[in-house]
Length: 269
Image (cartoon, rainbow, N blue to C red; front, side):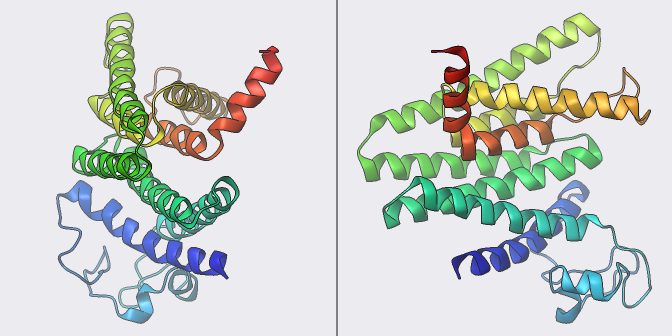
């Protein structure tokens, strides 16, 4: 039953994340107007038009009023959010035993994923990471860190996460500077620097921040190669790095311990 509740909750949150993804790049408020509207005719949508997944399928991806085509991104974000939330619940139930640990890590994981989804989809579409999203994420990550430190009376938690945020930002900043010097053009934006700081605040320092970067670079390289093979990107084309850092951070949060254990076993360490 907990999975059904989590999936439904994920669909609802995914619908809200769509609002953020659409309005933030336009400089609009995510709370006003409170009701969603058609991006083509600006008609305010009814409650029946706002049911996650169902409304999109029932209306066949079109506005009820003007028949304008609605981006498939809406249903993708809703389903993706629901699936990620369910996966976070699964991992949380397997990793933690006490109710307090389960509740804390489930909530933290879902909020972390929510920020990453918004950042990734905006970066993918506009090639830009908005600090108006990243900074609140960084602040929320710090509040969770502070709360867990007090709850468990373990100063190493806040030390690890704060250092993780700082190290993440410094590493990406150095890569950006070296890349710009080597390629004579901006290799990585400052948005990636702040994003890595936010991720570091959630996943901690060693070895998680390094694993996040390795996974992000690896996945990004694979996707870039595939796009070049399909001739959708040239070798000198820019590819947003934020989505890949986000995927790396999410994988690290969920499976970081297992990945490092596998690596140590592989290396015979």
